[in-house]
Image (cartoon, rainbow, N blue to C red; front, side, top):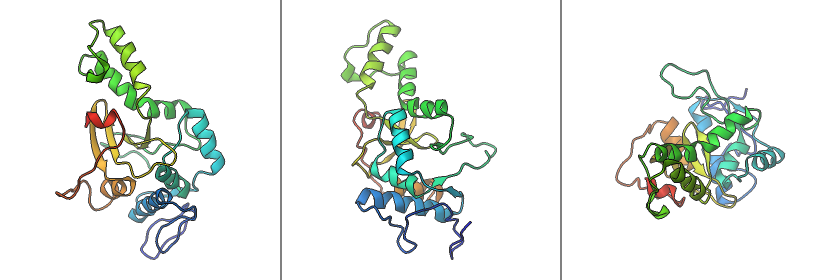
Length: 223
């Protein structure tokens, strides 16, 4: 384990400059993700395994049918945060997705959770999206229509627990969303801001200058 001069656990972080937290691959998205990884490491909460390799990204994206956004990819390439034992009152036992060697069924469930949450609200009569047209009186038909329409919504990829970023190669800087059924709120202006607010001293504090703008069609309408 490597200790930095400020006591941060930087073990496992790869390809980052000790000076500014940038990576070697270039591009704003890659730099943003690397910076977010270093911010998390600086909290000292988690240790890190070596980051995902290009071959591992290819396997994950092929198996699960999506592509990571550039900043999310760079975050995971810098180092994989290791889950710690669940504390009393903690919602998730393994909030960091275990992309390298986790249970494939659990990963599929995490990826499906945003859509399944909406479908659950549709099933129980708590939600219907106006752009889908009139809601059918029959629940089974309503669910069939909702499931079909949701295939056009951007794929959401878990970051931590029920915090998500949109998928999409050559995209970055999306606000992080907290998604629980149709209860969706902003949790960060971008990945770096999210890490700061979730794990650092900010801990949810905002002021009038904090004004995230969701970018993902459909999901942004639920905010």
